[in-house]
Amino acid sequence: MLIVSEEACQAVVGRSDAFQAVENVFAAMASGDAYNFPVIREAIGHADALYGFKSGFDRAGLVLGLKSGGYWPGNMDKGLTNHQSTVFLFDPDTGQLHALVGGNYLTAVRTAAASSVSIAHLARKDAKVLGMIGAGHQAGFQLRAAAEQRDFERVVAWNYHADMLPGLAAVADDIGLPFEAVEREQLGAEADVIISITSAHDSLMMKDWVKPGTHLACMGTDTKGKQEMDPALVAAATVFTDEIAQSTTIGEAQHAVSKNLIGAGDITPIGNVINGSHPGRSSDAEITLFDGTGVGLQDLAVASVAARLADEGGKAQQIQL
Ligand code: NAD
Image (tube, rainbow, N blue to C red; front, side, top):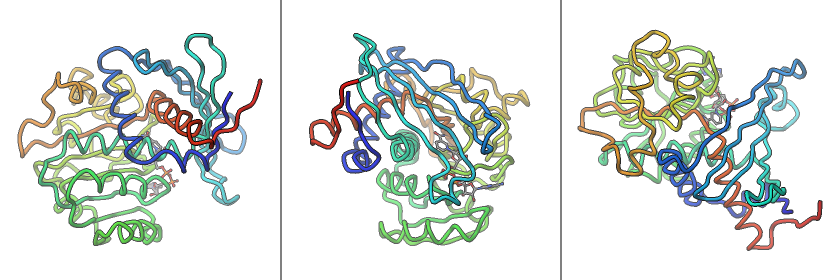
């Protein structure tokens, strides 16, 4: 059995590896070759933590396993990230544990890969301004991955906690993009692509603030009750997602669905666009929205790449169970 540390994951899995793995698994989900098992998520009544499992099987990629972990809000004070996770990969032929893989870095790269897959397939080719809503742990990963998908000329950003924005500005500076902190109305008026990655529980972006042709990657809402977008904006957009069942219940679309503004039939798996069975964006004026809810198969896909590359590069530890 392999043990692949956080450090090894960071050393071997790059953004392009994560992009490829996530794009492939979204396509496999849409063609029925890969499926996610029901998610378990519990407030454990200790340390204010949310803990759970996400699991699935990709028959095409032969990846079986689970990600276990959750959210510990007090971790930041201990010098740890609030999200903690570990991936377990099993041999689909025997059920034996194949690898134990650190999941923290991989969660960030696979989430950034999901929004960048959506940008690659749905944003206008001439997108020039990237709008960032959020400046927490995930936001820098999102910015770096998105910046590789279009010839962006600048970044406009807003965050609820303004004191976190300099950290994101430093990432923009590192990749050579001018950065401006703006109000949300201005962000909507200027951005061609908007990524939202916050833990908000209310609309941060209103329908009338977003211009025609915008692509929105809504990545923060992954739980019932969370919300980043005006439901009227979701209803006005053409909605794509990683998994429809999650989009309507725990994703950004949950609010538009519960208000009967849209139904599950209005939402398209992004894998259909990747597979070519849906054309994706239909005009330069269309607003497209990717509801990235986060599925276990994304984690398993990148963890499988990490295990393979770490093993090949001598960076994984071998132990006998
Ligand atoms: P973080 O704790 O580092 O940052 C939280 C972000 O949310 C910050 O930008 C903060 O200013 C903002 N925020 C907090 N309270 C807010 C409020 N009331 N209104 C508006 N903004 C508020 O968290 P992170 O690791 O960067 O994760 C951000 C979000 O992304 C979380 O909700 C997390 O659950 C979600 N997430 C989603 C996926 C996915 O696959 N879709 C994966 C990982 C994380």
